[in-house]
Image (cartoon, rainbow, N blue to C red; front, side, top):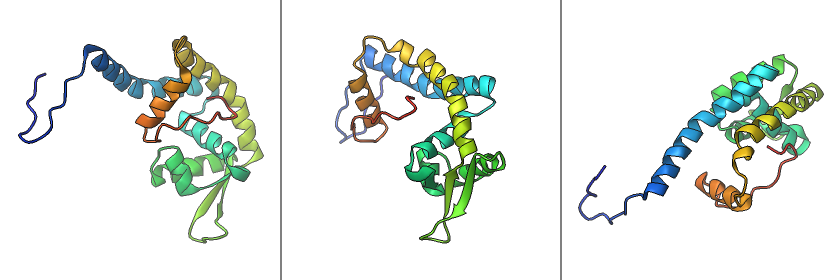
Length: 168
């Protein structure tokens, strides 16, 4: 597609064929990857990727506790979506919601032992899925540089990723 930039705007060179291929592949990946990781968890664990993500973030937080708004942001969910998901996980005994000590208007989500056990049960499935759908395709790449580039694209400033205790 050949578009002329608006008058007065700086000329931006078109993408090279390699850059265009990367953009198309990245766009597809952003749509497909969450679906395949979710499908593996659903099939083998009867757990959604969103549920797994909530439990993982709580397990990695200090004292297994996060403010609901922080948890929603960490999981890239709306507050209403997080509220519904937290209610489901609470009904399953995987977390508790308690009033914040410093702000009675806010709620903390707290990981329960049952929730941690459920995360540990699902983790091998998720790890195998990540290895099959992601890591298995990265052989020979500089993973540190790739992680920095992906982090920069996501707005994280390109700082090296910290390894999590769940290796996902």
